[in-house]
Image 1 (cartoon, rainbow over the protein chains, first blue to last red):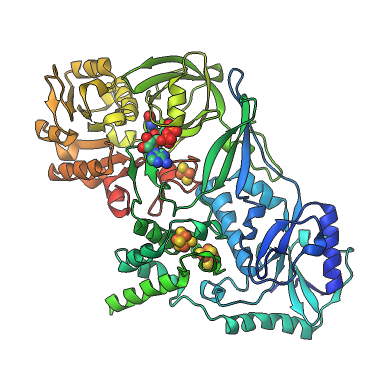
Image 2: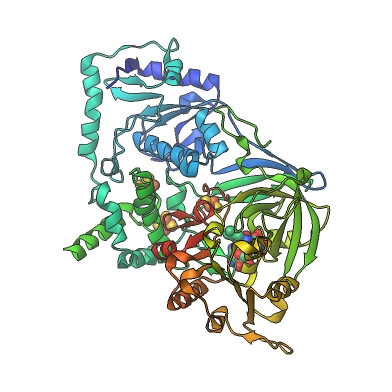
Length: 351
Length: 283
Ligand SMILES: Cc1cc2nc3c(=O)[nH]c(=O)nc-3n(C[C@H](O)[C@H](O)[C@H](O)COP(=O)(O)OP(=O)(O)OC[C@H]3O[C@@H](n4cnc5c(N)ncnc54)[C@H](O)[C@@H]3O)c2cc1C
Ligand code: SF4
Ligand code: SF4
Ligand code: FES
């Protein structure tokens, strides 16, 4: 491994870093919202940032891919015109867990490179980010070891792991160095401290109870063989098509587009908003014909998209094991429960 | 704004429509209107038959619309639009001098190269004739490069027939065969009645010398047409179908047009029967 700089910071140093980041420009970080609920938000008061949390309701992708975003300003005829609205204002995104870093890397591909087309709005906001990652501990919904995301550092500029009463900071990029250097004190980490930080990975794996019962390399074929599985129908009987599972997912990127007129009715903005393949009209065309008419079609689509189609195209599942969809589903539908039921069927029918 | 670059050298203009002017418009039927559109300075759109543009009516949104004129037409291009929802209703209220937004052309288009030197069987259902008109006109303008041209066109009723004068003109050429059928024949209609597949027994083709391009409306019709053609002996990589999906971006980002692992806006909208058979939920 290349020699990256590892510094030991006290907790006060981390608060100082947040303070500096907040002064420098916008800061997005997790804040406590309810008794046990957290949200990534643009924070005015760096003191409100939650250093420890398990998961946020909405993932940090909202920093570079907001729930709703105006991307075009237009003037209506006569004298029609249109221009791009792109934000490039630098900001700091603090406290991103490894799974969410992995998700950002996946979005970098989907929005930035897939089909060799670059989404200017995503890429501009992504480029404007300095990302501080944060090590975490799992709860009963997490399954990052199964999908191979629990040790992700890529995507972060600086990565913090709690060690003793402080944090071990890995400086991963020039941006990370710039955020840290000369602003907060810190000393070189000792080999014991590095060892303690490295032990997190093992601890996380040991503490994780939820899992996918297959290797990622065999998953696409296993699911593909159960396209007609009853599990899709059974799951559909409980699902409300509310779309919560995709809205909270850090890797989902489908969006809808709508024009909004100003009060003058002469100009307006074109805006995009998260869409969900679980909504009944997602695949509706004129006719009207719906390519995923049945709820079971849409349920199956979600698992196939993440664990068959995008997995084959990207090489990894479009799921990072964050557990948000399972925790948020009002119907109590579990991502891994459904997946494992289909996997079990596939193994049985192959045996 | 097109061409403007942001920090990392990325082009900012992906979603920015170019302002274009409607220079001609006429009603083709009670629900279809054809627009002649000119880009600034009469610049060529540079499309291939079967490609589409993302058409903006500012305030009403953007929708994919196929270019229905051939690439050879200089200075402007045609769009044939059926009045359905918010955007198309607003568009139907527009005429010469009005401005719209255009992005594109997008998509792969029909396999004109594969059709060269071959007999061309064109199967159109309803508004599907519009994009296929760009194919037919292009064949006409380069007539010696292609073999026979057979057009099978099915639409709901006589009052829904698109481009009637052009259908006449196409059938006047002895190298062409043009057959039209309507689902619901009305008083005074002496032509064929029935869905488009009922026309297949009326033509004879040399299946190995024929390339088929089709756009036939509801998905079930695709399956029927494919089955008919297979029965006639046409190889599956000689049949090409243009698929319709709800599209938002046209450039592979919004996720709306996904079919199995493919993206209709960038990998399609035209797919061979061989591809379609491996794509779940395609038709
Ligand atoms: C590649 C491609 C090429 C195309 N080329 C052409 C063309 O050349 N000419 C043309 O006229 N059209 C074409 N279309 C179709 C056209 O883009 C759509 O009809 C477009 O949606 C019309 O937009 P709209 O806002 O007017 O209607 P929309 O509001 O989008 O509604 C259109 C239809 O969709 C259905 N629909 C949409 N939303 C709902 C809902 N919430 N509930 C129930 N039904 C709903 C209805 O059947 C409605 O009639 C093409 C489509 C594709 C993908
Ligand atoms: S959150 Fe649950 S109920 Fe809602 S669409 Fe997703 S699986 Fe269905
Ligand atoms: S599918 Fe569920 S567990 Fe996987 S990344 Fe999305 S929200 Fe997280
Ligand atoms: S229309 Fe957006 S991905 Fe194809």
